[in-house]
Amino acid sequence: MNTSSRFAVGVHILAMLALHDGSPLSSERIAASVNTNPALIRRLLSMLAQAGLTTAQLGTGGGALLARDPAEIRLVDVYRALEDAPVFALHRERPAAGSVVGRHIRTVLLEVSDRIEHAIDATLAEQTLADLASSLTQHEKARVRKVAKRKVG
Image 1 (cartoon, rainbow, N blue to C red):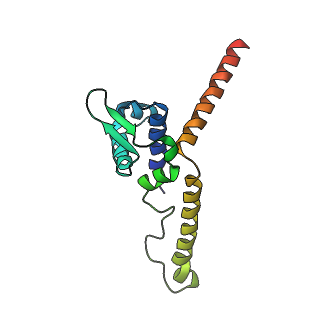
Image 2: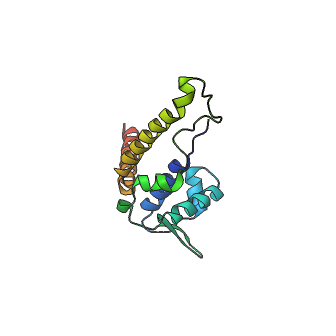
Image 3: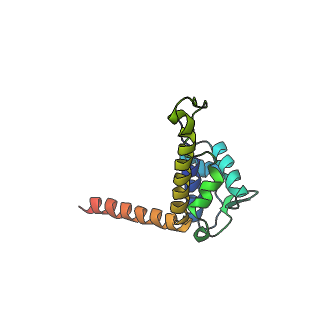
């Protein structure tokens, strides 16, 4: 069973743009950080642009930019822009209707899936890209302090 990494990579892209202070970033530079192919980054940037989250600056020194302030971009916006599959898939074949489970499992699982989707949306709506960028910065500061402490001690 596969799960999509589009959301994680999309947030990675947007976090880089948020921390880059309004300067455009090339898909190659972003791809190096994500450790993936620039073509994948361009495909995701296109999806993010369609959702109004990124824009492109063309020409020499061009690249991707945030289309909005990081405080205005909620992680749920990123999730909706990039993830189109349900949380989990139902049976590939319709279950046999000869049993109670077979008759009703799809309906019950759809109800569960709906609750999960609502919980995901609610959780992701609480956090902005600015929150995430701040958390990344704090983690980096802690890492630098730890490295400096090792050098001193």
